[in-house]
Length: 511
Image 1 (cartoon, rainbow, N blue to C red):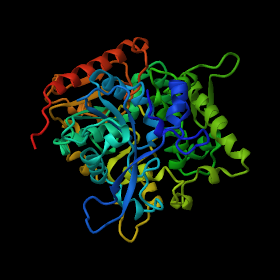
Image 2 (image 1 turned 60 degrees about the vertical axis):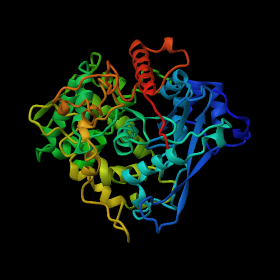
Image 3 (image 1 turned 135 degrees about the horizontal axis):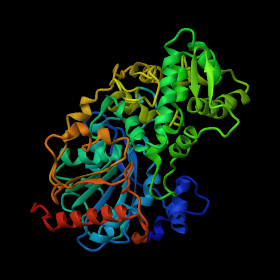
């Protein structure tokens, strides 16, 4: 990747550092990216209130290494994180691969309220009210229609849409945004790829954990049985206290107790990746540990009141004690100090260091995705029954008290997302790419709830399911594509092929 000399900072600059995995993935190239100066595009704070004159600077990065005259712009949406975390994808990832094959520019556009593209002085409820799907989409549209990439790259030409074809790519939340941009601004977004795009928002997404359960049959039955045992004990007044005592979590409410148990690495499954330098699957080793019987002469069962609990339950007890209880007690805090969520005023700290607040605000206002115990009878649980929507949504009330100008709704307004298509979102030159084993698949167009009518996979409307893949498995890549797993090589080649086919039909507007 060739970076223009005028865009390089001194060695002492630390303001825009990459995450550590980028250095493993890119080597010395990561240092050049680390030294890349921010490039800003001025956005209005409010696209829809013309009396609001406030603006902010939105960061973006450009890789012009592959550009050939007439090539497209491959725009990778930064999503709910710093744009620096996405830079490897315009160097060796999917955006770079498509740009290389089409002679295009590859760029990352940072999302408002993330990284350094922050338009406000704090993350209070009122200050977050401009963090909406509509405002963020309008940012991208304004950028594509007005950005002067020639001034940035030194390459002559008009790189605005629709004069130049823009291929919009995003993964996960950004994948949903990619699909939304295509259906909302079809005159600006020539083509789009929604990878693991969670286009169907849901208040209750219990299915997330069920994907993990079905994907790991070698160990999840033992873990699920341990959670069932917890459910039985909590529902029995004679066992409720003793089961918490056994874990070392005496005195917690049922919901807080269950939430500590839910803090095992279930979420680690979605972080797995075919490239170990990019992903980290903490769920699989945990689950294997849970399913491993103790070596003799250690007992494989233990009595809890009138119940006999097996080794899977005892393994979970040991894990919680070693990883949570002992760490808490070493800090000279009580169990309640560490794990009780009642009256937690620290959740209302809203300075800009509280970088968890923007995405949680989006969850509370529009996206939901509260992951609870399964409601259908007969579905083995992966989290305990007290993990309910009421419990998980309590943070929305605690963290975001009503402001002078904005009040968070009692539950997320998921219709604000789903009105754009939900499970059935579709358009010409909109590619849907998902992973077979992605826990977010139930919120995508590949959900089992979206099975009627069956979709066809065509060049104009690609509909791809990557075998044995988890979350946006296609987004990262290797400089030497032959070293990628076969299914990743396949999806990258397929993405290149349908984008090239789309571009053959591109005609710039006459006016």
